[in-house]
Length: 220
Image (cartoon, rainbow, N blue to C red):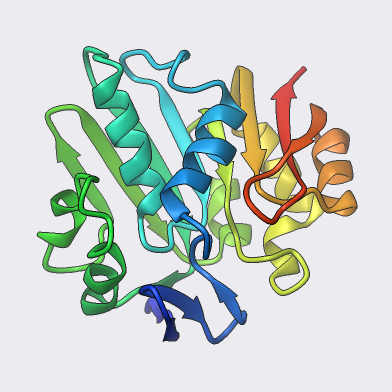
């Protein structure tokens, strides 16, 4: 299946916005700080990192979450490799991806920016990144992996409800390792109910920046 390309416009501060979903790719306040609060702290990281720790993600976007996670893995001094699998339906063009990441000088952006094409599988000394292209509703059920932690980072549930359905949350649960976790910036009721129905114990906690609440979950 031919990849669908992300359609963007740019806001002040170098923030890319999806014109398809009318939603920014990362926080207008501080995208890297939001990733650390929502996805790292929300999944109990970096304390849980170990060789082979597997993060899965809905919505690769600019790759910011992957880069923040990789930096945290390296800063934690973990031996071995971090595994990171992301599901992305609308791949960015490489010029757009490079422009989006150009504002994050403290992150290991060369891992992505030095690539000639949008990533599918990239291996380094301390990581394995796989990006599975296509609609997650079709690709996730066929995935053979099981994640220790999920970053649920699709566009806003109000604008991209397909990526937050109860059916997809059930697939997330089916592909979660024992004791695995999930976190997301949204506290939408139907998302939390979908996670609960899938078998997660769900907690609403303080969000980042202008978002009052977010959601974290643990497989029971």
